[in-house]
Each structure stands twice: as structure tokens, then as C-alpha cells.
Amino acid sequence: MKKTLLGLLLAAPLLAQAQAPAPFTIKGQLGKLPAKTKVFLRNEKGIIDSAEVKNGAFVLKGTVAEPTQVRLMLLNNGNRYRLRTGQADHTIFYLEKGAISLVSPDSLGHAAITGTPLNADFQQLQALLKPGQDQLNALYATYRAMPKEQRTPEFQAKSDAQEEALDQIINQQYAAFVRTHPGSAVSLDAVRDMGGPVPNYAEVAPLFALLTPAVQSSPSGQRYAAELAILKTVSVGAVAPDFTLPTPEGKAVALSSLRGQFVLVDFWANWCGPCRQENPNVVKAYNAFKSRNFTVLGVSLDEAKDREKWLKAIATDQLPWTQVSGLDGWKGEAATRYHIQAIPQNFLIDPSGKIVAVNLRGTALQTTLAQLLK
Image 1 (cartoon, helix red, strand yellow):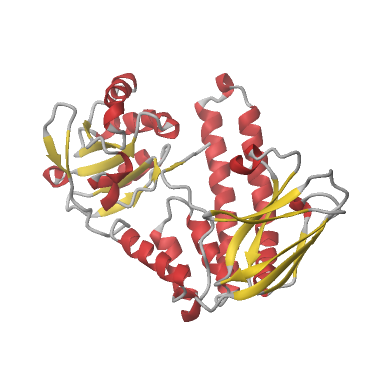
Image 2: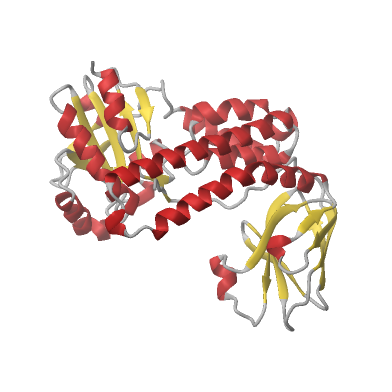
């Protein structure tokens, strides 16, 4: 399956227009639970409140400055490890002004959440996404159950194609929701979730533009607009930002020095499993097109302490093209200019220095090069 490693694990963002703190009440009624059971309310910064569950009931009260997506977790027997790992029984909803009700015969995961407008919107979005997500989860389960020795290139290609098709279906549902709910703060989250850790500017920017001015000008809307502005600078059609980094031998190499040929700028690291799995595909493309005005520039996000591991990975994966790195991880010059928050990522640059494709995986790189280098 196609995988991406996050450099920044993004929690649910704050949403909606800033306002004076408003009161909220969360009332829960669950089935029979063991003694000493507690619920914990968590936002993107950490646990913000908790309450004991007595006879299946609990109440949380407070104020919220703006609607916020939160996670409510259930824990008994004091096993806080499950809170830290996200393994605790939980549900996700929007904390906003008003009375929020959670009712379930057993677990938080099965709770019906009612009482406020954004949660009604969120329930509708989840219902739209569920069929596609269920199919995607089943596909992942099938992949995990397959012994590694049976994960042939043919099986991998088929799984990737199925995943791609399901991703498209899910993205269509996200887009449909945004179009019918442009004034809902949930739609801003939908745009962000649709983009994922490696958003496609051409897909998410038009949807963001559909949101009402109130949603776009909210604190989270402004933050996402700023992210889009950066993303636009490394989207298809933009001139690729230049950078200069050293090779393992210490020679400084500027991206602009490769102007005049097609260049795949490939961001990776020795510790990145998905990157290492993708390397054979890049090697095949390099060998097939290196004599046709195409090359690769590998940019490692390794750190100085892992220099030897980086060099070993280059040798082990037999990567013949130029490799560069400042050995400063995610904070490096190239990673910053290209807004890298997950790897693997790559950018195909034409001879004039413009980006013509992004994140070509599997056979897509060879297919694209074959079309461009006819």
C-alpha cells in the first residue's frame, strides 16, 4: 500500500470565527461501566478536562472561545497509557456553545452525539464518508494479512490502484459536502482532511475558495490560507524554488545548476520505510530515461547523527544519482522551501525550471516521463 510518513502529526485544528468565551455543557449517558471509570476531554494541545462516570453518566462544563474539534476518551482501571497512544475508547466531535448530548448503550465509539449545529454537520459528513472508508479499511486489513513474501509487484500494483480509486471516491464525498455546506466550519476541516499530509494545491485551493468569507477569515481559515499560499509556490506550474546543499563528499550542488533537463527532486530519509520501498521504482525510471535528458536529485531529511545510516542506505538501495543533504532533518533549506511535512515527496521539474508534476509514485513516474520525453 502507498504510505507517507508525517513529519508533523497534525491534530484537529481550531475552527470558526473568534468570539468571546461561550458556555458549553457535555452530558453523557453510557451503558453499565466498571467502577473508577473516567472520561477525558482532549484538544490538539492535550487533555483539558475530565470527569468521573457514575452509573453510566457524566457531565463536563466549561467555556470555549471558538468551536474546536475534540476527542473524548473513556478510561477505566487507570491505564493512562491507552490515553497517550490513542487506544482508549473514544469519539470525536465539535466542542461549541450549547448543550451537547452523548448517548450510547456501551462505548463512546458508538455514541450518538446531538445538540449543536456543527455536530449535526459533522455527523452528516461522517455518514457520507463511511462507505468509502469502510472499504478502504477492509483493503488495508487484506494487505496487512498478506504474508510479505506474497506481496508481489503485481499484488502491490493492484492494491495501490484500489487504494487510489477509493481515495478518489472519498475525496468526491468531501468535495460534495463542502459545496453544500460552505458556511460550516466543518467544511474547513473537510478541505484540510481531503488534502491530507501532502495536499494537492489544484484540488484543495478551489474548495477553500468556495467557503464563505466568515469561515475563510476565521483564525483557522487564515492559518490554512497561509499554508495554501506556501503550497502554491511549489505546485504544478510554479518555478521550482532553488536551493544549494552539499553532497556526501562536501560538494555544493544547486538545483539551478541542473537547469536544462528534467529533474526529479526526491525527498527521502534512511529511516523512512515508504521512501525505501519507493526507491526501486525511482531506480527503474532513472535507468530508463537517464539518457533522455532526465536525472534525479535526492534530498535526504536525515540528521547529522544519522550520516552513516544515510550513506549506507544510498549504497544498499543502489541509488546512482546525486545525493545532497544539510543533515538537518525537517528544518533544512530545501525541506522548508518545499513545505515538506511528510515523506516521500517528489517534484518533477522541466528544463525551464517549472514544476510539471508532484508526488509521482509507483509506475506513475515512468508513465509521466514517457509522455514528456516522446
